[in-house]
Amino acid sequence: MVIDSIKKKKVIIAFLGILLLIYTVPCFFLNTPYFIDGVNTLSLDFFMQGYDWKNYLQADGYYYKYGLALIYLPIFFVIHNPSILYKTLLIVNGILSLSVPYFSLKICRKYFHMDMKISLAISGVIGILPFFVLNIKHTWAEVLLIILPWILLYLIMNIYDNIQTGNEKA
Image (tube, rainbow, N blue to C red):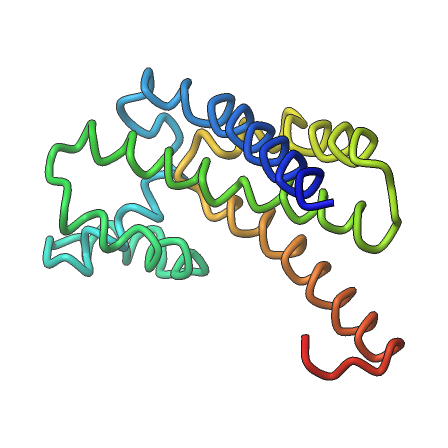
């Protein structure tokens, strides 16, 4: 029983590791945002770091990308080379995006009682959907818009399950 649990954890770690490679390896070949929308999120971080981006932000507007900008901000204080900074931010997107296949795997296993192979297949397909993989390669706020529904879905299902079973701890 313990050995099976360890094997399953190793399989999940290997699965997530493969997806992380798929998400992050292309990031090493990108140097700058090639859509202006990717600059919007970054401009807020530069502004919070003390650079004068008032004209840019006033022209394009202060808007909804504060969440991802706050996640990116500590990296801005550590890395000062723009190319390395951008690549690092894309790698952070890849790491954050691992939560989608992880939570889909947990939902399949825990709430739909699916076999591990089927759960991995479903989570793998979800994890390599073209819109998903392509959105990771930009510093857009869409990364959070893709991740948050999965986290909320898992939390809602967990709350519902606890209410049904009378378990108030989890």
